[in-house]
Length: 516
Image (cartoon, one colour):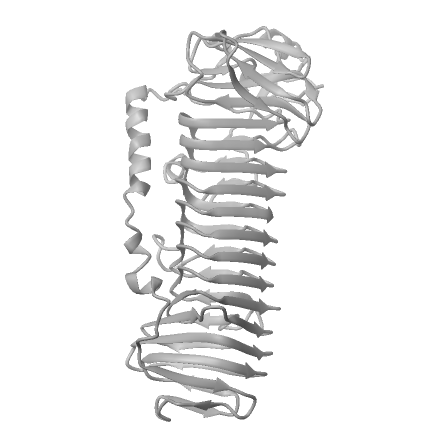
């Protein structure tokens, strides 16, 4: 989580003397802001952040969704029916296209198949040697299997699975989580889910819905409970719309491809997504993109994780016992080591629109590389653990738009970039304020720029918006206490920042201590 740690001292003299205090509120930013030694100009930084935003906003959604992925009406198609019943299933299709062996039904030809009825210890297998598309319409289906996937796509060019309007469909499996085909619904090929009905999936030992290629969802209601991941795709998981209630033992949504470093992406452009996860709520091994949608992460270890994370819209709420948002590639962070500088440039968190609320026990936003805040609204009820912070980064953090409120009780603070194009404030209090203490920030004309009531105790307040400008004087009020902030530079802080181990410390040993 932490890379370069900055330790708080009330003044350099006190630090050398070994008596660390919380913060010296009389010191202004002009003498204390730690500006990066990088000689990159503000203009160059602005150009870089535009490139970062352009990289994501230029993505064409057709890369993830075809027109056919959205089609839910198959009334005009040549439909074949399959009626499920224990040891008595039947089909209107040719016997060469659909074979029935007890409770194992195998579909081997392209076409549209409407399934209804119930199978216990049954399985639907899709296997087409011609590598063609198969369409399943689930119309009040219930299938259970204790040892294998209830629905298995063993071979097809692509499978479309549609829930009929108003239908309620239930799929459950106790397949071993370590098996090769380890999901209640498992596909070796591209799988698209859509519809106007409900699909409930339960996997007591494995994944809920898994594709070894692309998993695409464009509509429908999905209730998935899984011991492992609820939704998992190898190349990608792409969600255009739908309602999702995901209860995962590990990750709610997960994409990972060990064979292609450019894949393993999650792409969300809409939907009502509710996740309770034992590990990450949403995890992309490569790129995680959110353009829209209502995402409520009620429980997670880490809320949103990927090497590159881009949020361009939507309403997102994250509760996590570790980092709320984490950008990393697995080479560092989380164990105290610094990510290699060459690697940092490929790790980013970018916010360009939408709203993001984080309530985290560890870092609110943690990037093992860069953070770019170019738009949107971010609010962080950060950690009360003094070793964690609302915003943490290994490379740098730039504020170029949007509004950010970050609250934490950190003693390991990192100064924000003075190359930001928007003013930003980090203010360290002398004492810890209790939860539910009102915080306000007003400009010299008594215009209120921020009002917030943190849900936890705190000692550090971070704020940035387009209203914070160099040369202006602001009044910060915390409960009954008032503090004056004069913006002498783009990045304001009222504490002395020292590299860990760089100067003799006090009670904390070499490199510093903390608040007494």
